[in-house]
Image (cartoon, rainbow, N blue to C red):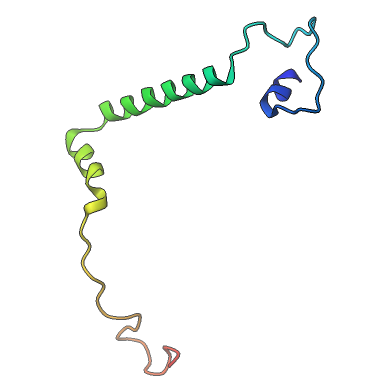
Length: 87
């Protein structure tokens, strides 16, 4: 139950009792959790970088600059009937 109180940080809940077995004395502070989460994310990103080949890394790096040819034609196709396009 104390886990849920800490998780949702409810202000209206009573503080845990001193003799509550669910409460650990070494509960990490929120800043420590943020640092630990950032460290874990960095570790995951480094592992992903090691896993990808150089070519794949380059493709991902320049994916925003990829060229696409302009769209040609319209929604109407050759086998459509002349008046079925909603005109």
